[in-house]
Image (cartoon, rainbow, N blue to C red):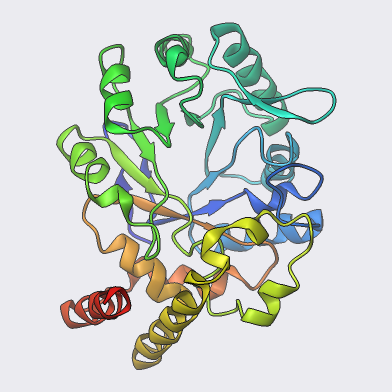
Length: 319
């Protein structure tokens, strides 16, 4: 795969990275249902075999479990990929999730992530959510100090708005922004992406396939039978009235994909990567074989007419 420089860093990353949210497993508030760790390790290894050179996880995914699984997948590799993780979402002994941007809390999180991932330094450390807002300066100052101390190589933010990024920039440069961005989540286009481009902030899009909805494998029946502990059951894009529109969108993506021998997932991710402000996109996989259906998006370009065709779909849907 070709690579692209991530913002102001010395990291050159592939257009697609492995997203480790779902492999955190069940038993926490934002889980995706039960998950087999052997499948998770195999899926990560398969992504690396296809040339993916970075993994994005977070301490809160599975309440530490995702990071542990990533470490298992990286054991024995002669050359490991870049490892990105996140802080600020914390949990207590009752597994209740909260938020903290206090300096000592972030330092504890960083040390815990280093232990779970079994690495000496984190390639990219990101504030997961800017909550509480009044502690953004303290949290970002702490990340900058962790970088100075050599515990992390680069620092970034996730789910920040432009005003919050301006406040962070007054303290230290931002290497990357991680916003949700997909055909059904386009809010980032208005302010976030132009701002990131102007400030040389790399953009890593998360949920480019709308949490599996745009892969072509998600049917109405499958959605109806999602496990009770799968967070997607409560997501508006998996419910009416948006669900019917989204399934029609998948049909269009499939039609476009057939012209090129591509899957709907590849078309959906290629659309995200088509935006010049996007450095790369996070793609999740839960078992071997899944990554093959999307990894081709890294070198697939939609034509101008196909981009317009997708735009016309939404214009008609909104009419």
